[in-house]
Image (cartoon, rainbow, N blue to C red; front, side, top):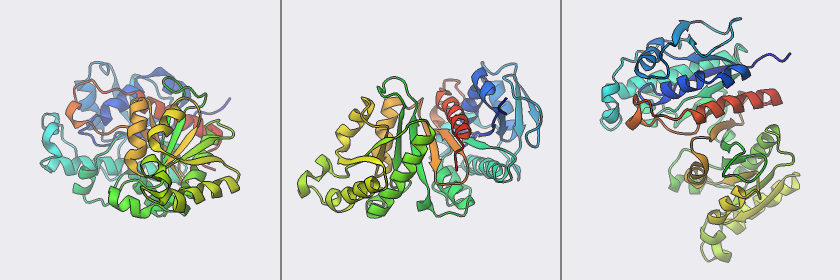
Length: 357
């Protein structure tokens, strides 16, 4: 009998919807059949959320220091406090303006989010857990707390002593409507958390090839064999033969050629305004996009609440909900936990596949 993977959930910013979607995932029997779960969080944060949410009534918290022989179950929430501990008073009434005003709660939220992730990373690196599934954090809160990371991806890279460019972020949408293909759709980004002006300067043939190879490897572990990937164009109409820019000819086409030489099924550059339609209809299993919004907007339109974020290039298994903190609805009980649930199930699939190798 296969042992259940040991999966750590982090809530992200405690003043956003992270605690709610974590508890929503915990309240889903399927995830406990697939994994042994623990939540890394300040127990008071989760108790505040349990008290505020109707679906979580009857849940009770038990504090633990790591995984033990207990199986996780829907009603007993097993919590590992972060080390060092965070202090996050219940200020749900102030959530709606805390980021805009850079208030104290912003820094507290950023510190709590980062501390939980750091604790989870340490447990996985020490082989005391198998995977991390993260809830959403807020970049302003993170910086207010004194961290210089743009987000989870870069935090994970540096914890593994890697440069930011050594890792990639993939948005993965599991199979199901509106996707016509049998394997879902993965989108990896050549650049990620930087301004558009800066991203354009960072796009290179080498980075596209690196991102494409990571994407092919990940899709293969998710059961797509061989993965069919397409590389997006950068300019309107794929540059229109050089009239709207020459990046397609000088940077992107050589990258596609190199990917093919390395044994990948790769085509491109294809204009982004039609590429995602082709992928939705089953023509491709994966796409290399070149900057954050080129990939994110299309994927979130296709299935924001089903999509999963996966970090590629690190020696850790980390997935995440694909949405943000949603401060405007925090504490209202209306957050959809589907992305967090899919993130747990995707982590289990990857663990069973032997990823990361």
